[in-house]
Length: 353
Image (cartoon, rainbow, N blue to C red; front, side, top):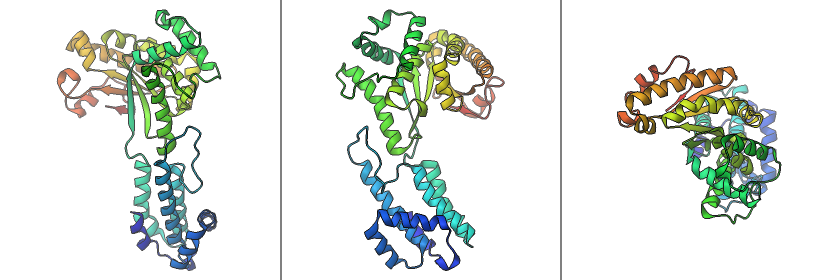
């Protein structure tokens, strides 16, 4: 795609060039002094071709940098793009200059197509969700807190005690985990998962992984554990934490769980960082196995109404994530009919299936 742009962006500097683009070319020349001489000789008086050549060099450097072993303290080299947004800035710089200097057709043609592709796919191509069982989180945090003598047996605590302990730990500025992990393989794997999310965000951008789903969520503590581990990895403000209510009992308790979270100051701070948006996933398969088709669907319907009311009361923008598909027992069926059948007020321009 970049190669094809050279034939399009042949406009001479005699038509005019924005000051911002000239400054950008000077900055790029300082980063690539040898290449700058070659580009100037090959594309004399053609600032857009020169700029696109620098863009290509930065993309090559970014690709090379992403292939090197990752370090938590690694910063992008100046010749690399630190994010897809920086790539977009260079493209928009050319687009704006063209639009200002009799190049509107080129600005809105292939260059706009490339910009749209970068806006859509970034460096990550497709956004992924992470999903893990709440018991895996509880087991990991029990070992972590036990190692530091903060609690003798996390599993024996009541939900209220877990809630208070995790809230206090979220306010604690010290790291939860050391750089070198020496816990059980299961706990190490859980900690490394959140570090992997951070790595993906740093290399590919925050849209690479933007949702963390907690299977079998039963209480607010299940969500606070994930917030704590995400905070420890430095990704709490860049990740939607999504409770998944699956059994009939958990569906009926979903409103109370979200009420407890929305009234928790530390979780509220996380929500504000996410634009006061909350995803909640509801499970069709497990609820059906747990209570049968009729009871499960009635519980799903009532839960959606309850969640809408709780979110409205706290000024939270709710997105219901429907874990449905496949057979009827797993919530399968025509998608358009499923959307139209949602309870009143549960779809406000946002739904996830």
